[in-house]
Length: 111
Image (cartoon, rainbow, N blue to C red; front, side, top):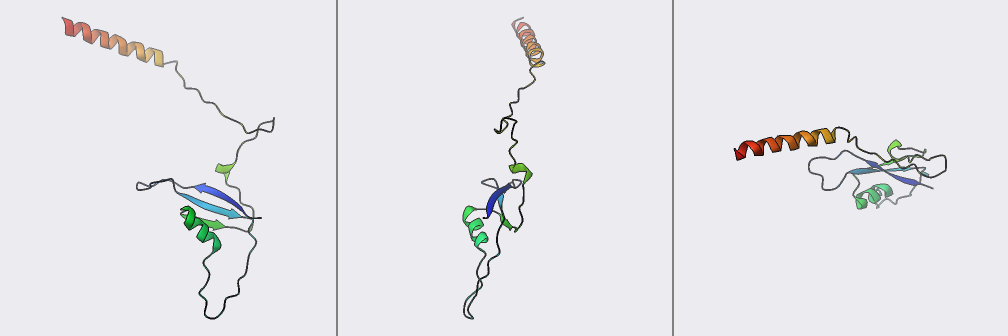
């Protein structure tokens, strides 16, 4: 059975929404018999991509893994959630310098 993945693309200046491409893998080839008076069929996946607003569609018979779509799994079997904390060690020093500068400016203005 075919799998559909999303490959995020870099944003351009005029993009109203983040651009993406559809990556479809594990697709079994299909053949269509056309009569003499029929126009060639547009690829099914091209129609899907067009309706979803994708910039492109990439179709493969093999399994394709997109590293950006991988979710790391912890030893407990659940997805790993990362928590980042800022380094605020210098924030206090910077705030104290700014306060001292403002106080000095205020004293100079009152003289």
